[in-house]
Image: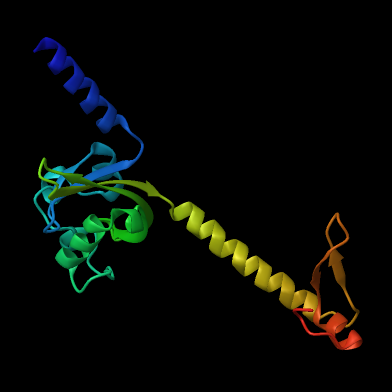
Length: 178
């Protein structure tokens, strides 16, 4: 039993020190476990989250693949391969919205009945912000280039055309996708 206790302690230490959110959810959407990282990231106490439904604090405005949380969890748990990675926004206690990516795994009992969903979350808020900023920059650059009256052409290292401005298209009478 000492060996089992030692292994359990190692497991607990691993889960509690992970730099990812680890959550277990039962089929009715009730949080049965959340690790310390998740508690700290979302700003709720463990007591506020464990025993609460996902929709009470973290996901009040989520759109589901089913009609409601329970049917959605059933769909996700039964079709785990289709929902191995999901993204959504989490509402933190302080009102902040975090973009999260979740890796999901259904846990089954010996009879093959889904018991719970084990999900590991990564905060991708900074990545999403950077992607949006990059997209805005591309739009701005393209608008500036299209405002230049001279024909501009960009080619890659293999001399393939990668971009042209509107003046280039107008002068040559080409279409954008040509």
